[in-house]
Image (cartoon, helix red, strand yellow):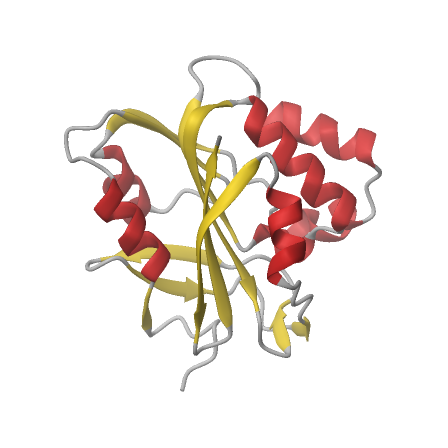
Length: 195
């Protein structure tokens, strides 16, 4: 079995499959991607016609700085990279970012995301359940059949934060988890909705 960071293996994503099944092809969705710009992801999500905003919230060079942030500094970063302007978002891709934030910053992130989203917005996130994780956020590429290729941005690994699902559910409020999937390769996926 390949590691979560194996860039050669496409991994089934039950949460993305469920997300795809719940969306009408003629839906118009405004998408917020908190990861870097990835051509395949842009193509996949722009078919919904509402536009895709790339925020690339945690760049590798930022990770130590952001981990040391207090709430005020992180709030400024959020306001700069995910401004509360324009139409609200319908779908948010958080990817693996929760793994790199402490409790306070994870809550702050979700509260900010709720403030820039419309009611009924969907949110996709994942946490590592293995013993280790890459020391900075990975890049994820959506493939055919709602699979993902995980590409680490570093060859360094650290102890995984491995937050229990109840903690992630608390971080996600006011989003509500509607499905969670534990995958054999050391990842748990979450699909949540803004009530």
